[in-house]
Length: 174
Image 1: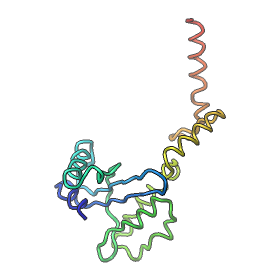
Image 2: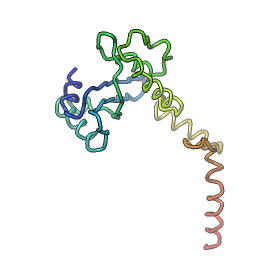
Image 3: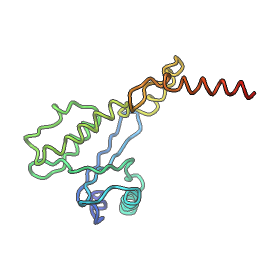
Image 4: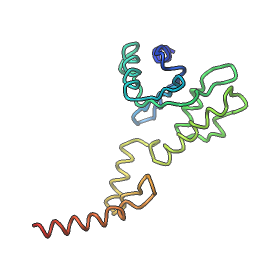
Protein backbone atom coordinates (compact mmCIF):
# COMPACT_ATOMS: atom_id res chain seq x y z
CA UNK A 1 0.00 0.00 0.00
CA UNK A 2 2.86 2.40 0.78
CA UNK A 3 4.40 1.81 -2.64
CA UNK A 4 1.09 2.58 -4.33
CA UNK A 5 0.76 5.79 -2.30
CA UNK A 6 4.25 6.88 -3.35
CA UNK A 7 3.70 6.08 -7.03
CA UNK A 8 0.14 7.38 -7.31
CA UNK A 9 1.09 10.64 -5.56
CA UNK A 10 2.79 11.69 -8.78
CA UNK A 11 0.31 13.71 -10.85
CA UNK A 12 1.08 11.75 -14.02
CA UNK A 13 0.05 8.40 -12.52
CA UNK A 14 -3.60 7.37 -12.32
CA UNK A 15 -3.15 3.77 -11.17
CA UNK A 16 -0.42 1.19 -10.60
CA UNK A 17 0.30 -2.45 -9.85
CA UNK A 18 3.47 -4.05 -8.56
CA UNK A 19 4.29 -7.74 -8.17
CA UNK A 20 7.39 -9.29 -6.68
CA UNK A 21 8.29 -12.49 -8.46
CA UNK A 22 10.36 -14.26 -5.88
CA UNK A 23 11.73 -17.40 -7.42
CA UNK A 24 13.02 -20.10 -5.11
CA UNK A 25 16.78 -20.17 -5.48
CA UNK A 26 16.75 -17.45 -8.14
CA UNK A 27 16.99 -13.70 -8.31
CA UNK A 28 13.80 -11.78 -7.66
CA UNK A 29 12.18 -9.61 -10.32
CA UNK A 30 9.77 -6.83 -9.39
CA UNK A 31 7.98 -5.05 -12.25
CA UNK A 32 5.78 -1.99 -11.75
CA UNK A 33 2.88 -1.35 -14.12
CA UNK A 34 1.49 2.19 -14.33
CA UNK A 35 -1.52 3.82 -15.94
CA UNK A 36 -0.70 7.39 -16.91
CA UNK A 37 -2.94 10.36 -17.55
CA UNK A 38 -4.23 10.59 -21.10
CA UNK A 39 -1.67 11.80 -23.59
CA UNK A 40 1.34 10.95 -21.42
CA UNK A 41 3.99 8.36 -22.25
CA UNK A 42 6.40 6.68 -19.88
CA UNK A 43 9.82 8.10 -20.70
CA UNK A 44 13.22 8.03 -18.98
CA UNK A 45 12.52 11.20 -16.97
CA UNK A 46 9.22 9.91 -15.57
CA UNK A 47 10.76 6.49 -14.92
CA UNK A 48 13.51 8.18 -12.89
CA UNK A 49 10.95 10.27 -10.98
CA UNK A 50 8.99 7.12 -10.14
CA UNK A 51 12.12 5.35 -8.92
CA UNK A 52 13.16 8.39 -6.85
CA UNK A 53 9.70 8.73 -5.29
CA UNK A 54 9.72 5.06 -4.26
CA UNK A 55 13.27 5.27 -2.90
CA UNK A 56 12.43 8.41 -0.89
CA UNK A 57 9.13 7.11 0.49
CA UNK A 58 10.26 3.56 1.21
CA UNK A 59 13.78 2.31 0.47
CA UNK A 60 16.05 1.26 -2.37
CA UNK A 61 14.89 -2.33 -1.81
CA UNK A 62 11.38 -1.36 -2.94
CA UNK A 63 12.49 0.20 -6.25
CA UNK A 64 11.15 -1.98 -9.10
CA UNK A 65 13.45 -3.62 -11.62
CA UNK A 66 11.34 -2.47 -14.57
CA UNK A 67 8.44 -0.08 -15.11
CA UNK A 68 5.84 -0.58 -17.84
CA UNK A 69 3.00 1.63 -19.03
CA UNK A 70 -0.34 -0.16 -19.37
CA UNK A 71 -3.82 0.95 -20.39
CA UNK A 72 -5.52 -0.35 -17.23
CA UNK A 73 -4.85 -2.27 -14.04
CA UNK A 74 -6.97 -5.44 -13.72
CA UNK A 75 -9.40 -5.26 -10.79
CA UNK A 76 -12.03 -7.42 -9.16
CA UNK A 77 -15.67 -6.42 -9.18
CA UNK A 78 -15.12 -4.90 -5.73
CA UNK A 79 -12.18 -2.82 -7.03
CA UNK A 80 -9.24 -4.80 -5.58
CA UNK A 81 -6.09 -4.94 -7.72
CA UNK A 82 -5.42 -8.42 -9.10
CA UNK A 83 -1.87 -8.73 -7.79
CA UNK A 84 -1.83 -12.48 -7.20
CA UNK A 85 -3.33 -13.51 -10.56
CA UNK A 86 -0.89 -11.21 -12.41
CA UNK A 87 1.99 -12.63 -10.36
CA UNK A 88 0.92 -16.18 -11.21
CA UNK A 89 0.62 -15.28 -14.90
CA UNK A 90 4.14 -13.89 -14.93
CA UNK A 91 5.42 -17.01 -13.18
CA UNK A 92 4.07 -19.14 -16.03
CA UNK A 93 0.66 -20.27 -14.79
CA UNK A 94 -2.08 -21.01 -17.32
CA UNK A 95 -4.34 -17.93 -17.74
CA UNK A 96 -7.43 -20.16 -17.76
CA UNK A 97 -6.54 -21.43 -14.28
CA UNK A 98 -5.49 -18.08 -12.83
CA UNK A 99 -8.15 -15.72 -14.17
CA UNK A 100 -11.89 -15.59 -13.72
CA UNK A 101 -12.94 -12.90 -16.15
CA UNK A 102 -16.51 -12.96 -14.81
CA UNK A 103 -15.17 -11.76 -11.45
CA UNK A 104 -13.29 -8.83 -13.00
CA UNK A 105 -14.48 -5.25 -13.28
CA UNK A 106 -12.37 -4.73 -16.42
CA UNK A 107 -11.71 -8.14 -17.95
CA UNK A 108 -10.14 -6.75 -21.13
CA UNK A 109 -7.35 -5.14 -19.07
CA UNK A 110 -5.82 -8.53 -18.33
CA UNK A 111 -5.21 -9.28 -22.03
CA UNK A 112 -2.06 -7.12 -22.01
CA UNK A 113 -0.69 -9.06 -19.02
CA UNK A 114 -1.48 -12.43 -20.61
CA UNK A 115 0.36 -11.37 -23.79
CA UNK A 116 3.24 -9.92 -21.77
CA UNK A 117 3.65 -13.18 -19.83
CA UNK A 118 3.53 -15.19 -23.07
CA UNK A 119 6.23 -13.02 -24.70
CA UNK A 120 8.48 -13.29 -21.61
CA UNK A 121 8.14 -17.08 -21.69
CA UNK A 122 8.88 -17.23 -25.45
CA UNK A 123 12.09 -15.27 -24.90
CA UNK A 124 13.01 -17.39 -21.87
CA UNK A 125 12.87 -14.38 -19.56
CA UNK A 126 10.84 -16.36 -17.06
CA UNK A 127 14.01 -18.37 -16.33
CA UNK A 128 16.96 -17.16 -14.22
CA UNK A 129 19.69 -15.24 -16.04
CA UNK A 130 22.37 -17.73 -14.98
CA UNK A 131 20.35 -20.63 -16.43
CA UNK A 132 19.69 -18.74 -19.67
CA UNK A 133 23.39 -17.89 -19.99
CA UNK A 134 24.50 -21.47 -19.29
CA UNK A 135 22.01 -22.77 -21.87
CA UNK A 136 23.27 -20.26 -24.43
CA UNK A 137 26.91 -21.03 -23.66
CA UNK A 138 26.44 -24.79 -24.13
CA UNK A 139 24.46 -24.21 -27.33
CA UNK A 140 27.11 -21.77 -28.63
CA UNK A 141 29.81 -24.36 -27.97
CA UNK A 142 27.88 -26.62 -30.37
CA UNK A 143 27.65 -23.81 -32.94
CA UNK A 144 24.03 -22.94 -32.14
CA UNK A 145 23.81 -19.21 -31.41
CA UNK A 146 19.98 -19.17 -31.38
CA UNK A 147 17.55 -17.23 -33.51
CA UNK A 148 17.06 -13.53 -34.02
CA UNK A 149 14.13 -11.93 -32.22
CA UNK A 150 12.96 -10.21 -35.38
CA UNK A 151 12.59 -12.56 -38.32
CA UNK A 152 13.43 -15.73 -36.34
CA UNK A 153 16.50 -16.30 -38.53
CA UNK A 154 19.36 -18.54 -37.42
CA UNK A 155 22.04 -16.25 -35.92
CA UNK A 156 24.84 -18.43 -37.33
CA UNK A 157 23.46 -17.89 -40.83
CA UNK A 158 23.04 -14.15 -40.25
CA UNK A 159 26.66 -13.64 -39.18
CA UNK A 160 28.34 -16.21 -41.44
CA UNK A 161 28.58 -14.09 -44.60
CA UNK A 162 29.80 -10.85 -42.92
CA UNK A 163 32.20 -12.90 -40.79
CA UNK A 164 33.62 -14.60 -43.90
CA UNK A 165 34.22 -11.18 -45.47
CA UNK A 166 35.90 -9.90 -42.30
CA UNK A 167 38.21 -12.92 -42.17
CA UNK A 168 39.12 -12.48 -45.85
CA UNK A 169 39.88 -8.78 -45.29
CA UNK A 170 42.00 -9.72 -42.28
CA UNK A 171 44.11 -12.07 -44.38
CA UNK A 172 44.45 -9.60 -47.23
CA UNK A 173 45.55 -6.75 -45.00
CA UNK A 174 47.83 -8.84 -42.78
